[in-house]
Each structure stands twice: as C-alpha cells, then as structure tokens.
Length: 422
Ligand code: AMP
Ligand code: MG
Image (cartoon, rainbow, N blue to C red; front, side):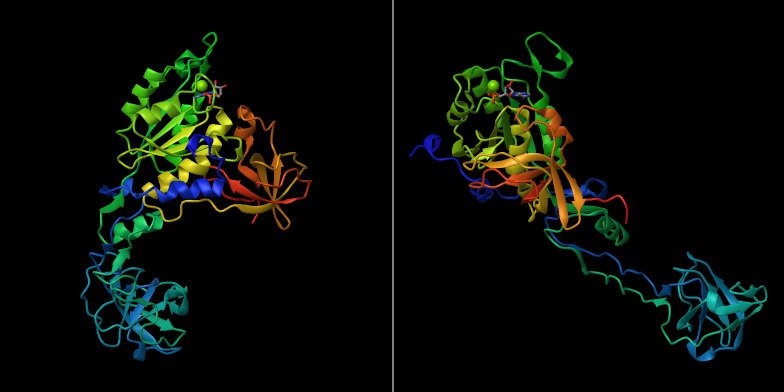
C-alpha cells in the first residue's frame, strides 16, 4: 500500500517510527559557558583533588582533639583565614583561629566551632593571637575537618557520557579545572515555510497577506528543544520553488517544512520531498490538531518533518514529533515530557477516531491537576494556544468526556508545575 493511502498512525506509533530513525549527532568540544543543557559525549575526569587540602568546615579553632575538653583553655598561636598557605604547624598546647576553607595546620586534627568557645570578649566571640580561648566541648579527631579529596579524587569521573550538563555540573567541572567539555552537537534545523499568502514580519498588514508567524514560533520551539533554528526564505506554492527550497534545506541536520503538506491542489511539499530523494516514513497521524503531518528521512539519514500550516497544528505536531527527535539528536536519552495526571474542568466534545490535544490551562488540584480548556479549540486559533500551558489528551477511541474526567496533560514548552505557596 502506498504510504499516502496508509491509515493515519497513532501518536505513539508515529513517535516510535521517528525515534527508530534518529541517532545522536557527532560531538564538539565547547567552553563551559556554552555547555548548559547539552549532553556529555564522553567522560570527564577530575584534574584535581576536591577539596585540594584538608580544611576547616567551620569558623573556629583548629586543635589537637586530645588537648581539648569542656572547661579546658588554650592560648591562640595562629590566625588562619581562608587563602592562608598550607603547611603551617600548630605548636603543642595551643589553638589556631581558623576560618571555613582554610587549611588545617599540621598537628591539628579537629576544629571546634567558635560558638562552642568563650574568648576574652565573651561567649562565642573570637580570641586574638596571644589570648586564651576556653572550650565547652570535647571534639573527636576529624570533627569539622573536610578531608582532601573527600568530594572528588583526582582522576575520578565527574561527568559520564549521556549526562545532561546542568548548572551544578558546570560548577563541578569548573571546580576540578575542566574549562571545556565534549558534548553532542546541537542540530541545525532548517525551517522551510511555504505559501503564496505568507510575508515576513516587516510586511505585517500587507493586503491579502499574513505574516509567517509559524516560522517565528517554530524557531523558538526548536531552540527550546536544543536545536539551532535556521529560517529560510518563504517559498511560494510552486512545485519548482518548493523543490529548490527543500534542496537547499537538506544540508542542515534536520528540516522542518510548514504548510502545503495536505491534499489541496497547491500542496506540493510531499511531491517535492519525494523529488529530493526523501524517503517518506509516514504521512498523517490520527490527531487533532495536526492530522496531515509527514515524516521522512533523507538519503543521508537526516529527518524531515512536514508540519501542517495551521498555527496550532504546526505547534502541536512539532511538540509531539519534532522535539523528541531533536533531543535525541542532541544526545538526550530522555526525549519525552511526562504527562501529568489531572481532571477536566469542563466537558469536552471530541470524536473517537482521533486523539485530541486540547489547549488547557493547568492548575494544581487537590489530587493532581485541573485542566481548563482555553479559548476556541480550532487549529487556527492562536490565542487559545498562547493562553495554554498544557495539552489535555483525549485518546483515540474515547470521544466526548464529562467534566471531572481523568486525563493525561502534556506540559508545554518547559512549563513545569509550580504553585503559589509552599
Ligand atoms: P496549509 O497547511 O498550507 O494548507 O495551510 C493551512 C493554513 O495555515 C492556511 O490558513 C495558511 O494560511 C496557514 N499557514 C500556512 N503556513 C503558515 C505560516 N508559516 N504561518 C502562519 N500561517 C500559516
Ligand atoms: Mg499552504
């Protein structure tokens, strides 16, 4: 059966067919400031011990634990702020003022926090060099001492291949002296917009024309998914022009076309893809919005997504099909948002032969989340999409649902559940 007359796929089938054809891209070495959110392509080992020397975990006094007991006194012989050179020696029967992070002097084996001492200026107040400090506690050897290498030993692996470079990992890499990291390349994604009616944003308001809003929204979605968007000039609804545009797009790591992928007489994208040697893997998914959506693979193995032109359809189909693919190309193992479980705030009317992705506002509820449909649900209604922070899913075969029905809710665009009060 030719693919164009195959029955529409379920979202799950379509996502599976896509990910089967996607591999992570090659890797590149980037400075830490460009590494946030990227995925490590190889292990990184520590260049240093962390901490680099035994040091104090508190502001207080470095002592020999055996010389200290409640009520005992010692003279203060040294003052060791952070940044002091290591290798100083604590004289017998003396204490050293020491600040957090300063090297433990040779001979000392414990730190007593200043709060557990009394100096000439009073309880919890530091004594000066030459003055005496009285202790309220009996420290154990090792108390409040951070050991050299206790966090990371030199040569230990601090980042595994596949790890996402999160801010805390950037802090760790920097601290162990790694200024660069090998990560998977971000996919460069061409955006091919098609339509005689489209103009660029600087022509907004031109008679009989609409702005190519999708290219802007899609560029933001691509960037949010970890890709590098490359919008190409608008192609008119002319087979040769679309063929040329797609030909020029194929040098990118991935291609997203917008519009012209349905069954109208001026929908030339599928023919142009075929002419460009793109293997069409599927066309049409049993979803609303966004049924006429195509996925193909170039001879070089690069993915091509043919999104429908209606703005809501383009947005939703990119979320469902394009985003996971770009994440996989960027090296992520976890490519899908996990739906939240919630209840519909009002009844919805849908047809069972499609899965519906309803634009909803998501709010915390007593036992999960509440999904309130926002705006008209037509596939050209941008305000509803703009107001939504999630998509409530009415699965294939279900149809109408009453208020209170339990549904899965897909959070949109990095939106994660937040509440107003702790
Ligand atoms: P199509 O998928 O080409 O049949 O387009 C369906 C609807 O989406 C039409 O109303 C188009 O004008 C509109 N449309 C197509 N492409 C875009 C775009 N890039 N930006 C905004 N609207 C578009
Ligand atoms: Mg069109």
